[in-house]
Length: 247
Ligand code: NAP
Image (cartoon, rainbow, N blue to C red):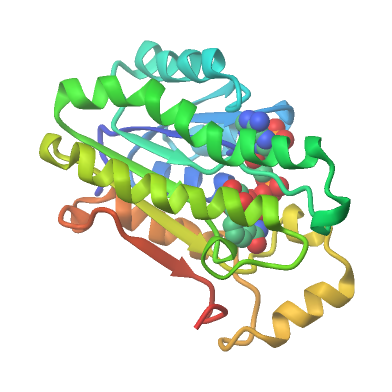
């Protein structure tokens, strides 16, 4: 298996895209830290599913927006499994609003979790990867970070920020055999998109050239590829997984 003996942290893995990524990495042989913020039962179910399939995983609660909790999360991987090879920065939220109506807290929450969370977790994990001269960092951005979107200035700014972060860090750590890439999903069927108004959902679906919303597994397979030896020579890349939405 492509990821045998690798240790991976997936942030926000209690449901949705993060859950699918964690299951995919585990099925390729990785040992998993399943991070979550509040939904403990969801995280425990993901652990149970992995263990039930013969893999290894633990759940770990940490708010990625909190630098100390991010450090604890990185330590948990090393304590449980003795290493840390793959970090998937997936945790994210939306607080959509038109800019004139956007509250400061809506801006701050999205930037704190979606962008500062990536900084916190990456900084917490990077020291270990630098020491072992090996690592994979995969950041879940969004096509909205490439195209922008009405009522998502906060989310688009965070997701575009992730792309700049990814390219900068890729240059910074390439000489230490650490790759840093981003995945930019389009419209994926999860709780995040289920909360959108039906009209907005239908409008999205009508604009997807491949004619269907994405599945969490569509994002997971590309993430697993970027974590695998098949992607050894790819860094600083942004891969859209959007059925053509942003063409
Ligand atoms: P989701 O179903 O709403 O799940 C969000 C996940 O993030 C949950 O596991 C949640 O944990 C976790 N999370 C939220 N705040 C956190 C915090 N402060 N610390 C740690 N974990 C936290 O969302 P999703 O659709 O799977 O999205 C996953 C990622 O893909 C996000 O970064 C999102 O922006 C991105 N994305 C999604 C789409 C889409 O169409 N769905 C498109 C493009 C990009 P709890 O369960 O404990 O709350």
